[in-house]
Image 1 (cartoon, rainbow, N blue to C red):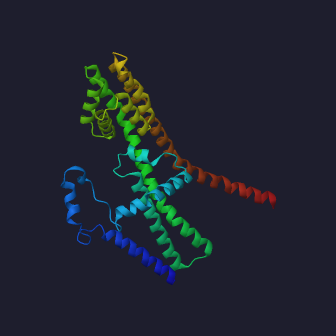
Image 2 (cartoon, rainbow, N blue to C red):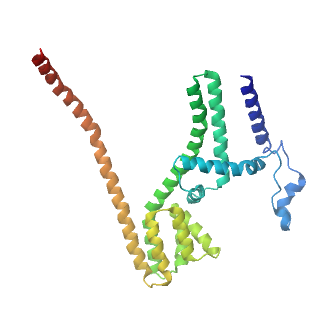
Length: 301
């Protein structure tokens, strides 16, 4: 019992130190560090993190957290890179920050599981299961949140893509260039496609070609309809009727969306009959079983 309390006290001390190091009244930065962002030249860069700070802790455990997190994600069947999923959902966090958070959640889960084991004192197999399941569950919860957010973003993008493709077709038919059409659609859109198009336009301002920026968008989004749309947009410099081609592709994407909606409606209509079938089948089997059992008893007797 005493070693567990000592370990818990050390963990609380380390956590309190990291938390208080971020509080301004507790760890006030020197005047030089506070004036550094306003100084000219290279002095404008941020000051190095202190020894007992969240930044230094992240820099220390970041590589370990990334390696362990990637290996655990592969063990549970997640093959897609975390950086791609974070870029897809426009997350402000980086891979290292997410992995460090997962590592912290796993450590917290281990601490909670250890306290439960110390309090309940179950059998050894159950205690080992709790100690292993606590960190694993904390890690998987964080991973599942990112996976769900990624799937939702892909679904929103798929549903919004026909409208955006039709807008691009109208703008191209009206005489807009591809870059101007992308910029106008990015400014007028507010959904998932709009956010992705604003990132595409930002890449264009950085000097990337239109085709390369669109291919990067398709690679990050990982949507089949977008994979078919990007090669059509890549024909910008090779055809003069790109607006007509875009309109045809928009109609094809809309047909795919309509087909999925019909399939979902059919599945829901079929699911309605499941409780009805069970409700009628179980009493029918009972009513058929009573005379059958009675007949067996008479013939057997």
